Amino acid sequence: MKLQHHGLTLLLVAGLVVVGYGVYRTGRSDRPAAGATRRAGVDRSVNVDQSSLITAERLVRLPTTEDERQFAEDALRFADQEMDLAFAQAVRQTANQQRPLSAEAKEIETKLQQAQRALATDQTQVTALTAAVAKASPTDALSLADRLNLAKAQAALDQDEVDDARADLQRAGGDPQGRMEEMIARHDAASRSSDSIHVTVTKADDAPGLIHRFQALQALYDKESQVKDAKAQADSLADAFKRRHDRLEQRAAARLRDTALAKLSHDSAAALLASTQRRALDEKTRSTLDQRTDNQHRLSDVYAGWLTVLAGQERGVINRALRGLAAIIVVVLIGILLMRWLERVLGARSMDRRRTQTLYMVSRVSVQVLCALLILLVIFGPPNNLGTFLGLAGAGLTVALKDFIVGFLGWFVLMGKNGIRIGDLVEVNGVTGEVVELGMFYTELLETGGWSDAGQPTGRRVTFNNSFAIEGHYFNFSTSGRWLWDEVRIVVPGGQNPYPLVEAMRKEIEESTAEHAREAEAQWSASRRSPRFSPVSAAPSINLRPTPGGVEIVARYVTHVGERELLRARIYHLAVEMLGVAPVTAGDAH
Image (cartoon, rainbow, N blue to C red; front, side, top):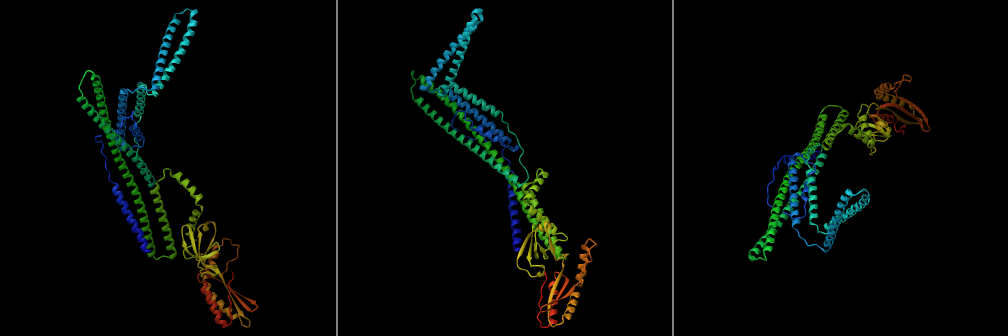
């Protein structure tokens, strides 16, 4: 047992050392660099790529602390610049694209031109009729007004045809101007959305309790995962932009060599001009790709710094969680040491055994309850609304743990003045036995049979919920009720004089039970509240009863429950000596 106790203590001390080391390692604060380092770097060119801006906006909308504010603002700014660069590149490519029209697009373009000419004719007619109506006489004004309304209706119809044809042409890829206007509209909408987003600084969640620590740590891990994905995206785009820049540079060098080898002539002047224009466009594209590459690297550096801040926050949360675990281990260790100290102190004092056991059990339960409350406080933290929390918790526990609560309260009753202690002989719910365990919720008896057979264990251990102390009843033969009536029957065979044995038994009983009778009378008289009852007498009595085989002597007397068997043995021994070898039988009344 000592080895087991020492092993548990050493295990707790080892756990405390490990947790303390974790607190030390996570307690160091590494301040991240405030700025971002420029690195070299690009992605493929697509129509107004907004992926970087969308990612930055999603991260900025997450809870942001003061330490993360600068990185969040930088990420949003660089992502907005990336969108502007992507828009400029897309506009430049769209403006210089001269794709051949398909048969469908040509047909739609013809239809559009016809609708535009019809619309121009209708608008000219509306203008002329409007002027004519203003100058017409009252007799001609009515007919001119009808023609004007008809012309306006036709113009509106032609306008609808123009809009429909222009939309069809744009979908068929034959309206560069329409695509340009659409890109501008999308860029303006994205810019307004980006300008409306501001970094909102929130205070870091520092709610006490291990539960809140683990929740905060999980939230930081999720945010760190998103920032890592954003950094990987920025690195991937930078690499793609760089590869595209290199390809354009290689093509430009090849065209330059071909142009230098070719002989300039009047026929090739136009081709040379077109080649020069293409080189100029490629030069602008490469410059834009360089800017986008650098911008993505800056964005990646911002995310790297952001990750450093998040790592520091995670270490702080882990440090506080480890402190909580260390506090739990300290509470458990102090509780164990305190219970051992109480056991030694109480064992060293010269006190009654029953009182010592009571003090030790009360002290042990008090220490355990206090340690459990402290551990729960460390795990869950102090409640925000103590009154509401206690009310709801009390109502729920009362309904769900009714038997345990009543049993726990019964334990306090059993610990009272008229309660029971370990080693007492008690009767609970018709079961008589010796108390071998008295816990907070259960009482365990070593069954000894009926009260008349007490002192002879049956070997069975019976467990009762302590609620019997409140909802039921019990008898304790080892405390205030330790005196009880006992009865002995002896049969004297026919032909023998029973009176010498009667006198000898009376003398033995009176000498042995005189003190017990006086104490029992005093206690029973003090317990009776009404004077109307007759006085209580604890004097022994011996009666003779004739039987078919002789005379039966019946002796009733008050004795201490612990001395009952000893007194019986003396009476039986006296009867055997006085009756000689005559048969003797004895029975107990119930």
